Image (cartoon, rainbow, N blue to C red; front, side, top):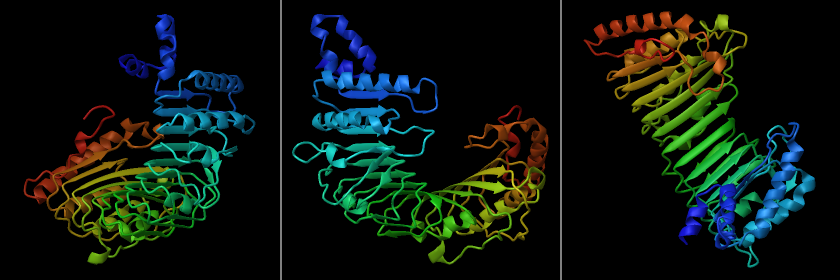
Amino acid sequence: DVQAVIMSLLPLKEAVRTSIVSTSWRMLWTFRCNLSFKGPRYLHENDTKIQQAKCIETVNCVIQQHSRIGINKFSIRCGLFEEDSVHLDRWIRFAASSKAKIIHLDLRFKDVFEEVNHLHLEALLDAQGSSFLRSLFLGGVVIKPHSAICGFTILRRLVLQSVTISGDFTGFLANCAALEDLEMIECSGLTNLIIPQQLDKLQHLLIDGMEVEMVEFYAADLSHFEYKGQVVPIVHHGCSKLKKATIMFSGKKGLAKAFTAVPSILPVKILNVRSVALSKYSQLQKLPTRPDGMFMHLRHMTCRIIVHSRPQEANYDIEVLQLAYCLDAAPQLETLQLNMFYVSSSGVSSAEVVGMRRHDHLKAVFMSGFRCYKAQIKLACCILGNASVLEKLTIEPRITGTRYLGDNTDLHKILPGVCEWAQLTSERFEKKAGGKTTATGSKTNRAGGK
């Protein structure tokens, strides 16, 4: 037993190599409980075919010799062509017969968007029609779920990425009553996504890049909800335990919609929002300030705003001031993180600026991508002037949380102006607040110097 445990901690190649140490060790690796294989993921590389063939051969060789006892995890990350589906069927039969608890099958080519591998969910069940699966990840396949598939009674985590779904998906989910985590990323085939009330143990739901017209779910224990995509009706039923929400609406007025289009997220304490492709001509929207339309329990908010404007016009684009209205809807807010990312576009917003309500709980604010644009200055001053207990406002010229590293170049050209503004503003509000330090922007230069 000790040898088997040690073997399970070694990489598969190293585990197999131990077979030459002793005759009694020759088949010890066949009791390994975790099997993970990786192959080529990009179709247009020169040696993709060769690498893929080698990966398929390795998987087939291993599962042929494996004892099929005590399998915990069976994972394959390798792009697969439709003509190779016979291998997929063999792998699934091995995983099912070995009573694997975790199955991870990511068969996508990352530079190809068509899913060509058909996977029968029934094949994941054993001869008795049941499954020991607790976690299932499927990527780059076509599935046809239906309500007659009843074997996934202990499945706790289901992740579908780039999966084409046809059939009765809601009926299938109704038979997965133990499900706690459901993630669906860039899946297709569904018009409406309905999560049935049988999933009363569901705690985390992620919907990302789904082209659906409506989302509706019943989940009494749901504590974390994430939605990323177009603005669609989202209806929650009985989500009284919801504590954290992530809403990333794309399209026109996405930021305001994140605060108004999903009323059932009002009880959350932690909110992450992102607005993509702000309209260059859209008017600022004032959100409802009635108690029934406010985030009365919200304490922490992270907001990422992508503003479309040409570099020469960024100084006049005031779309970022939509956030001032959003803050009015969260009177109990304590910490705010704002990441601002300006993208090249054309046109200048013509909306007018108005004030912001007083905040009696806001203590810490962090603003990245701060380049001293007029809208950014206006928003910072609104916060400094209206947050009565603010302890620190930190400004960071570097854009955080972005993959576009090119937008953080030439920071040395803007740092002197940002630091000067931070110093003057800090002194101004210190005097206004009777000695309370409310801005520390001059201390945020991570690009060189402070």
